[in-house]
Image (cartoon, rainbow, N blue to C red; front, side, top):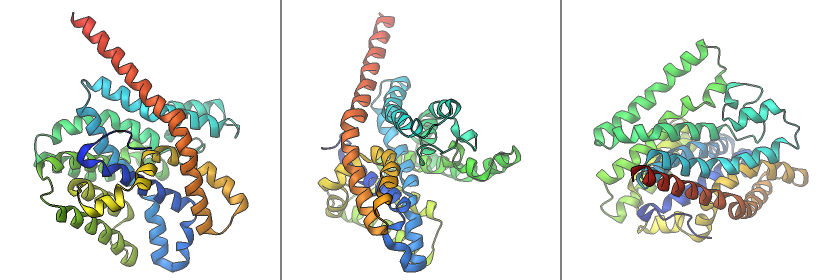
Length: 342
């Protein structure tokens, strides 16, 4: 199973998705034994959960690619929503119906507004809070990109505004009575990673890596940043994950040996290709695995392997057909536009 889409010199981004997905699985599976190593193991386990922040950065970057390849914003939105929602809706039914979820709960999830209610938010799959966030920013990324493409200064301005927006929005949400967890599971708390993804898309064109050594240095910087946090607590986990991801996207290049080995080997590309399905199914796989195994390392290995196998099936049967259906709708829109013009 190869790359679902050719992104040229940034095909390695698919490999980055693999590590983000496995990081989330690592955290939910109990850290694969890392917690036995004290503070360092605990920080590494928490960093695994920051795979979500890495996904948001990658999403901001990838949807810019999708927008650039679409004739209109409407066509871009159709493609993105067909990529995101059908697998999610089926996962909701698969998790929600056996659990006896109420009609109100399912409707709130299907409408992508479950994060507004504590009793519904993230209560069916266990990781679904990110899906409304993703969908929300699909609508705002085109505006961010329009500003960012004016130049590097505008890109940095977008990032700065996004970074500074979180605190006043949080204060406003608290004044309105929104609980802390709900706010940080809401779309308003994730402006910064998406802005980094948009900026990475623009800055990569303004500052293309001049040599393979630059790409190697970017990987080295990302690893050093992660290691400094794990060893000494430098930086907050979300910031470390966001900056490391953005750096690799901006300066990475597929010709660099370290990129080929770490991000473009066949196994990593496979996991990255099915990473969305891994994200959706791994909690269910984890619940079943914990019935038979208790060792954290063994649980992580079994859950990761089983989730990837299941995801290969769901990718072929659900995810890829839904993407193709999105393209069918785009062609319909194109034909209607042509008839309207003629």
